[in-house]
Length: 116
Image (cartoon, rainbow, N blue to C red):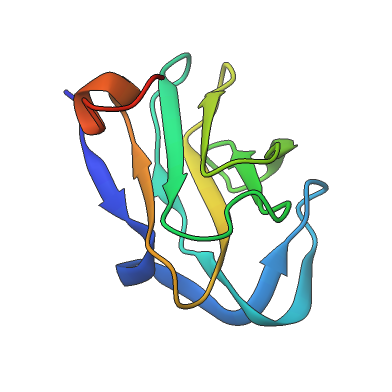
């Protein structure tokens, strides 16, 4: 079942950044989401109304919250990522003051007027 999470309402850590290696660092103006459940093999879309292209990271974890893999986004306001096998959670860094969503659906379904 498809869903969308407003990451600005799912804050795990304030003024922090999760790096692709899973480390959490102090970073004013950025927040890290809490652990969000995912489905292994499913596609997820990160979308930001602002600066998602400023190298935020999404990091996947197993059921024991052990790092599987991290992913830094490319430039642009949307990014597709696929949950690896054994993934149970994702955490995402995002810039404060801008909308940021994680969707388990197609980008066309979420934003029908844009190209995925």
